Amino acid sequence: MSEGDIDCFGVKYKGEIEEGIYKMFLHWKQKQGQKVTPQQVKNALRRADRKDLSDKVCKTR
Image 1 (cartoon, helix red, strand yellow):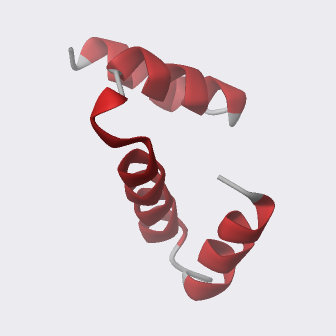
Image 2: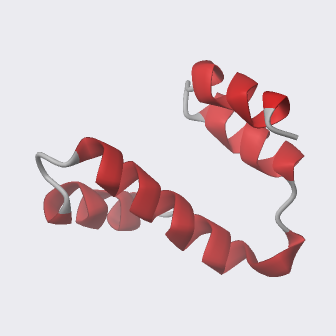
Image 3: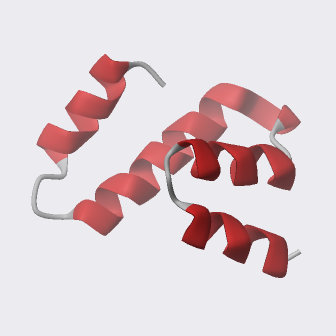
């Protein structure tokens, strides 16, 4: 996602952090299409410094 995309989500969901993060994830997944794998989600979360969520992706498989 571009910085502009992230900024837009930040403004739109100000005060609703969890909802904004979820909507960003859906937007990212839609842009990636069918080729998104759990490993890609895990890697993206790690790049976003969300190891806590990355670890949960592995546990739900």
